Amino acid sequence: MENPVLIFGAGSLGVTALDIFQRNSVVVYGLLDDNKELHGKEFGDITVLGETDDDGFLKLIGQKCEAFVAVGDTRVRKRLVKMLNDRRHIQPVNAIHDKAIVSTLAAIGHGNLISANTLINAFATIGQHCILQSGVVIEAQASLGDFVHVGTGSLINSGVTVEEGAFIGTGVTIVAGVTIGKGARIGAGSVVIENVGAGTTVFGNPAQKV
Image (tube, rainbow, N blue to C red; front, side):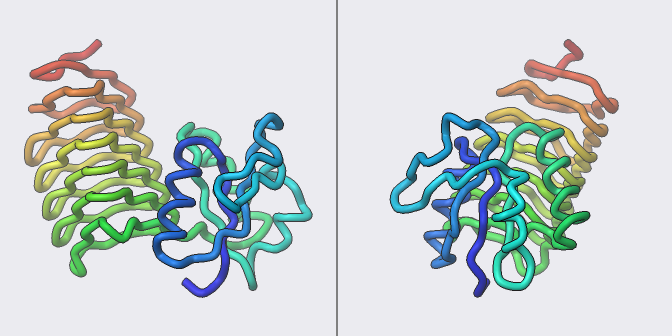
């Protein structure tokens, strides 16, 4: 990526994205965050410049500057992505850690955060604007929809389908072939052995509806 990038979000995900881009020798122009208490704060030599809808910074995005959305709250992430699509006619770029392993046979959309030691195997499909935290394993032919969040150290086995907006906590194991429905939530440390319906929250080993 030749252009500098502007990161939306200055919380823990924003700092993670900053580290990923800098490790990949991508220039980070700055961070934007709606929390005014963070404005002017510096992370190394990179500053939180202002709010996420500041036109002065937004107008930089496009020809000469890329954008990345690093916000954990899915509703806010969706709103920021839509704003960038509508107002700047761009898709956020991917932030892929140099210590992640991504098969050349995997398919990956736009705007994904892929953290250190994550492994994405052959013919896995990752949608748009997903967050894969450190040490996640996505096995062959597994499929993640858009805006999926997978917590640190989780294992998504082969042939699993995770639908849009699902949240998978830290250290979760999903056995082969299971489908996780749209907007479902899987509690940390759970072992999922059967399909989880849309909007359902499950927890435990084996995972049960909460």
